[in-house]
Image 1 (cartoon, helix red, strand yellow):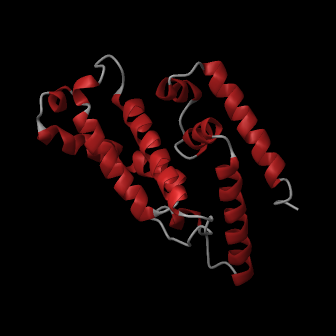
Image 2 (cartoon, one colour):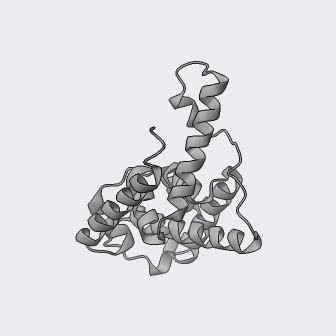
Length: 180
């Protein structure tokens, strides 16, 4: 980061290699579109390069980049939402990590049920207040610890814990019928 702050573009490559996958998962969890998520990650690195001089060398670069990715993804989501008058269903897309969850060829009925449940979960997640959704995504999609989330978002640990608890409670309330 100090090399980037001095304008050395060669330092951007190792930074991108180290954080690209994690930032992609964050962006994808917000945008639900592989191409938009990839664009958001690229824009995150552009913004990091432009703001490298403002980075505090005492702090870790991971949470700083995550915050940029979260903010940019939220901005992209809001812009897209303003452009669309109504919400379209989430398109069916295959991503590189979908294969991990497959154990065999599921039946067409199982696939249809899985798509329906996935759509309901995505809808319930989007209905959460922004802060709760951000904390939930960082915890369960990005697998961050609670102290890391607090540091990334600039919140107290207690606020993160209570927001996560409320998010889970709201999701359970909305999705209570899924397991039936």
